[in-house]
Length: 300
Image (tube, rainbow, N blue to C red; front, side):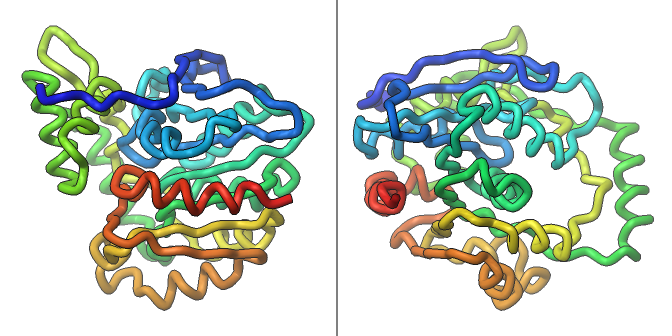
């Protein structure tokens, strides 16, 4: 393995029960009077430790908490054969009940986590003081006519559940991380690999339930999502990388003007683009991202 990244801020690993499942969270710093915690939630096939680099770039005068979603990282799997998006909102609601039951928090989500926090902030506007969405674009709208084919695909996949291949060494896991994101330095990849995977008799296995890869039988309905986004009361910061990830992911299925129209419905919006950054912008440009977050979070 190459040199391993040395974190500037020490993290503590904690477990708590949320809705009947043992969840893992990371905490940097301690609660401070008058300062809400900054709660971070990761994207699909990621882990809460992914935020270490941007936490290191933030000042020391803030408590930061990052959750491993159910079935990711060290959080417990459901034991079922699929996952449902509303459960992420339920888990987040339970987490905030445990962390800050009487006061709003600052809330940040990346990718899938960005979509979760946007919906949550519209459903529970009183629970969020400042909202940050990192590249949580959402997905193309789907028509009702797509339901039979989607359900048939889901039923077929249930008969042959997906799997995740093991890796021989942690170095192989780090190599996979760098292949996913060529901007990720080797030292950071080596550090992340230890959180992204665990050792098993078969090799190093990713800390993710393969059931997350199943087709979602519930269609994505833009109108329902936007009904939530329009109710967001917190000042909201949208941040994306300079690489056009929306086109990369979806091509013409989800045009940029569709996304821009959606974002225009968020009531109090600021936006920024990080140069030389892709979808994992908190890995690519953690210092530049922290420089955006600090003044935004300092608002009254």
